Image (cartoon, rainbow, N blue to C red):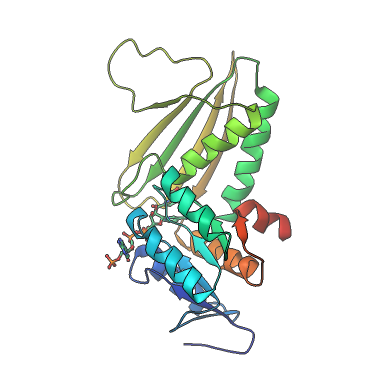
Length: 237
Ligand SMILES: NC(=O)C1=CN([C@@H]2O[C@H](COP(=O)(O)OP(=O)(O)OC[C@H]3O[C@@H](n4cnc5c(N)ncnc54)[C@H](OP(=O)(O)O)[C@@H]3O)[C@@H](O)[C@H]2O)C=CC1
Ligand SMILES: O=C(O)C1=N[C@H](C(=O)O)C[C@H](O)C1
C-alpha cells in the first residue's frame, strides 16, 4: 500500500465486489489516495440496497463522509440517506462517471427546451449479465433529470410486451439490455416529428466509475453535513 501525508484514505464498505476491486486498483494507480485499514477519511459504498443501513451507520458512527454508489434504492432508502446527511456529508450517485454527470445536465436542458412540442422520451441502457437491478440507477436518474427539465412528474413505461401498448403522451419509456461484460451504456432518445435527438454515454470500462468515485471522495472530504450529488463535483472542478 502506497501512502504519503497528502493521501486521502479511502475505506471500502464492500472491497470484494467488482466496484470495490476497481476502486482499489484506481487507488493503487494514484498517489493522492490510499486504502484505509480503519475508518479512513471517506467511506465508499458500492454494494446492495439491503446493505445501505449498515454503511450509513458506519459512516455516522465514525463521523466520516459517505459516497453511496449502490443502485436499486427506493424512497425508504432515500429517507435513511437524508437522515444520515444531517450528521455527515453524503453523496448519492447512481453513476460516478464524470461524463454521465455532464450528460445529466444536457438531458435536463434538452427536456426543458423540447417540452410541450410533442417529443417522446425513451431511455435505453445496456449492462453486463451479472447486473442485479433494472432499469439501471443511471437510467432512472436521467428520467428524473427529464422530469426536472419539464417541471413535472412522468409516468414510467417499462418492459413493453403484448398488444394495445400505444405510448402515453408525456410518459418516459425504459428498456434494459443485459449480456456479456458491457460496463454500462445509456442512450436518451428524444423522438419528435420527423427528427430524433439522441444523447448517449458509453462506459468502456468500470475504471471510469472508480476514478469518478475518487473525485467524489476528494470533493466530500472536509464538507459540512448535507446531501451532495455528482453535479456538485463537476461544478466544483
Ligand atoms: N454508481 C456507479 O457509478 C456504479 C454503481 N454500481 C452499483 O454498485 C453496486 C455494486 O456493484 P458491483 O460491484 O458490480 O456488484 P458486486 O456484486 O460485484 O459486489 C457487491 C458487493 O456488495 C457486497 N454486499 C452485498 N450484499 C451485502 C450486504 N447485505 N452487506 C454487506 N455487503 C454486501 C458483496 O459482498 P460479498 O463479496 O461478501 O458477497 C460484494 O462485495 C450495484 O448496486 C451497482 O449497480 C456499479 C457500477 C458503477
Ligand atoms: O451495475 C453496474 O455495473 C452499473 N450500475 C450503475 C447503474 O445502475 O446505473 C452505473 C453503471 O451504469 C454500471
